[in-house]
Image (tube, rainbow, N blue to C red):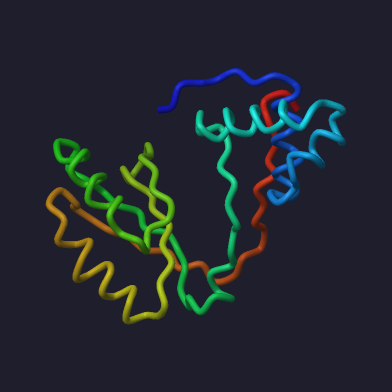
Length: 155
């Protein structure tokens, strides 16, 4: 697990602004928060380098031609967990991978073009990774809520 890093009120405000619109310029953020652009530039650089924030465009895979998105629930031989994680990181179709507690050891979210691609991913590729004992899939039927402005520790 990542080490916790403390952020102050200015960092928190910068994060809140960027969560609403990641394209907001450093100059505009500086005006909104009544500080210099150089201060904002330095703070955003540090927040990014420390992996506190990541500024990306979040796309809707269904509108990009990917017909199937969903979750994989994976049971792993714990002695081979590091190997399995290393292998899973190589799959472009898996955009989110976490180690979990409970019935499954790993949860991964996938995006594929069609049913044939999902079949190939699960049965031809993932199932051949040494250490994976079981894979359960869950297909997302419809996005009901997707948000990324969940707040900061100071809120």
